[in-house]
Length: 214
Image (cartoon, rainbow, N blue to C red):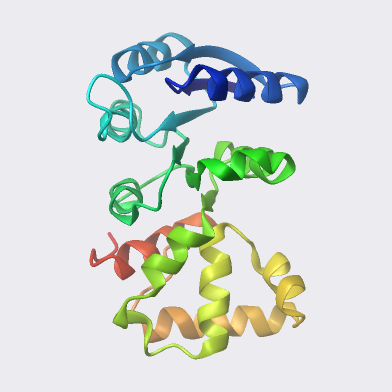
């Protein structure tokens, strides 16, 4: 797996590089701003990129803008975004009409090494890895009031990237029960399931954020 990192904090970027290299990941480039990130993506065509939301020179949303531009140039490019705070609007921008792997994690998740590497691997494979706090913010909307408490639990785990088997294990129910809950969720939200895996999750989260699925 080839990775490009866009992070201006030298300690964090160095730690990420060392962590990934010890796990056998090829870190092709470590850059500190959006322009350099776009250049690295063009040069190395990574399997997945790790991008900080806020990069020089303004430290506002340069990182997320660069990630969106990279995905515009290379549709489906897997991107895992790191943020210091819960910023659902940025997650929504990535989810809007998204194809390919998408991740949005808080930076403190990096210290949970196994979970972080698992999330990165899932995104590289085209899956989804959304921080539970971001999911909670998105699910705090009135649009999910039609769901039962159990269906909300299932939706939250789906958004975090869990498949049906993992959801069943977490909730101590059968796979068939999870499948039924998923069907009910889509029916109640007025969604036609767009396919297996992360695409259904992206569609639901986009809908919850006020954007109808494509």
